[in-house]
Length: 599
Image 1 (cartoon, helix red, strand yellow):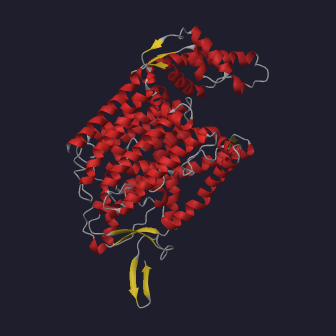
Image 2: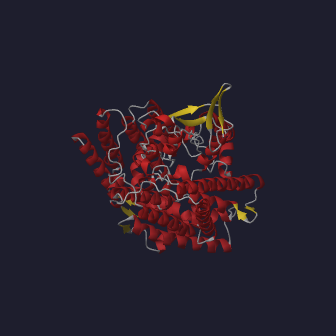
Image 3: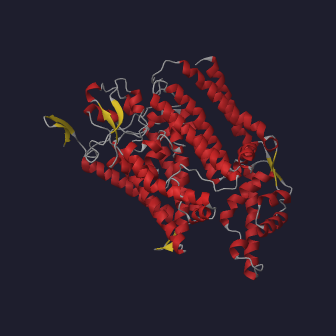
């Protein structure tokens, strides 16, 4: 590691420490002015202001958000009781209970906005300075660390990935601990999230146990002992710390944004410049997401200097994230137009067919209607048609934001994906189960939209949507999907949870021209291809037999071909055997009549 890299690493660590510490630098003081800026509903505003006076919270200073939030929650509860009591006596003329009463679902939003408006200190007073000292300095340090890698000789180098504390991964015991803790913790928090209702967390627990039972039953029936992935004897502690930090970030982002108002305030100046409004936690997330893909994309250029395919798809994911996912939606907001990531496809974009979204698009005029039609065309026409010609790689490895983050930030951890038969069985049951869940939820949402009824066969449409958003849209896609990069590989979400990946995979598996062809006579069984497969495919198993890789999970990233020292693997599109390619075993037969595949 040269001087420039040491400097870059040092700057990044300093920026990360300051970024973390900045959350505790501001104080919080609630005033009537900050309440009026935070609460838009006039009836709620009056009740909350009165409750704050009664609780003697106005003007009181709190040293941290962890002190402010519980105190403000008591104010909200008191205001809610006052509004409920008044609603029973008499509502203001022309005002409905929905407008007047304050539901518990508003508590999180009100607490977050009030915390942001009540903060005072170095971060809130100097947001642009702290932005450059944290996010800006971190990106600069990362680039300084990456740039010297362009001087290296082209080609893949292992660089002791299984000996490095950051990229070694978890031993079997630690892997089981983190998985079990994540599942149990999220289900328990899900009870609280669903207002102490146990039904959906209970159903999810039963489904999880059923899948575990089916996987182990299949293995006992087939009498096959699945080989474990390369699990180290000693767990990489730097990887664990990185994973815990990422998991903590997502927990705060999704369910406790009142504790990250300092970070959000740093993004305010940029948000004002792009969309004309204050930053939200989602603007902050989009900004960080985009910066990480851009900076780590530069690392991909350095690592894959020898491979044009990798260079092009890295350019692609960087462009789509910067333009389609970040800049264009923000500019549309500034123009008072409907905002949407035009590359986000249902069921990954699970809210697309929700009634509020459909009404918003239809009511926004020509552009909104175009977005609605565009989204439907993507689902019905583009996905099956383009996947037929190019496989799921056209989206998962070239366009998708989730895939873009996995391929850039997650690339150092791609070798940690579990290649065992057991993991493959879990993958098939879970990812297709999520797809079924998404289809059922969307059907309920559309039924509600067209009929106006909220309940179907005893299931409340809103409740189903809420649980899907919590369990799949937040917990699986964010907390586990990204937080587990250093623990279980970079495509945990894409492999086990993404419903769009499942939809694309079904088309690719049974009706697509894409495959990875192999030349078994050249394979030396070095195992590079399997080690670097982020989707947990044992590519070497196919290569040794000269069998094409035809798997629903394959995202066509092409890294297996890029790291092969003998040119055994090749990404191809061919219609020669598109109707037979899904059969388990095929043999090439050469005769006078020509070449054909036979069983």
